[in-house]
Amino acid sequence: MSLNDLIAQDAVIASLKASSKKQVIQEMSEKAAELTGLPARTIFEQLLQRERLGSTGIGHGIAIPHSRVPGIGKIVGVFARLDRAIEFDAVDDEPVDLIFMLLAPEGEGADHLKALARIARVLRDSNNTSKIRASRDAAAIYGVLNEPAASNAA
Image 1: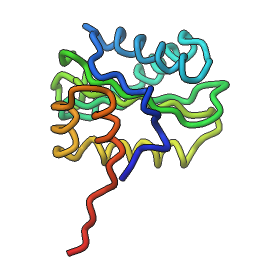
Image 2: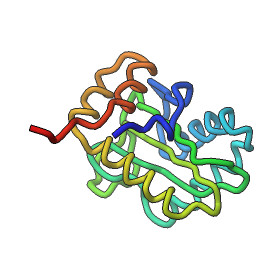
Image 3: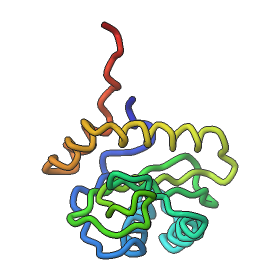
Image 4: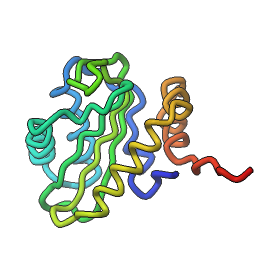
């Protein structure tokens, strides 16, 4: 399952240096601001508010911080591979090094949830996460995120 309609190649950060969950969200909010033209502070505050409801660390070194953001016109994703895993209050208490941030328009309902499910499916595939962790640059990571799903046909 490809994520190409959720993320652009320039929205991939191959080696983000951050030492805390808050710093990661701040850095990724700044990247999202570049892509959307919205204020980074607005994006950051919306994501922190969502994170206070419960961690978006889904386990196995993966987090999917997400929020609805006023003024955004369409669903936008930003992906970061951290240069060093950090504590993220994940459900399995393991540190996180792969983060897919998803921003959606305020009125989005079903599409936002479908996008989250697609991201989770791609990132829960250990073959994909191994390739992402081994990738040297943003273009390679983007390629893995956009590989079509393997066929179940015999």
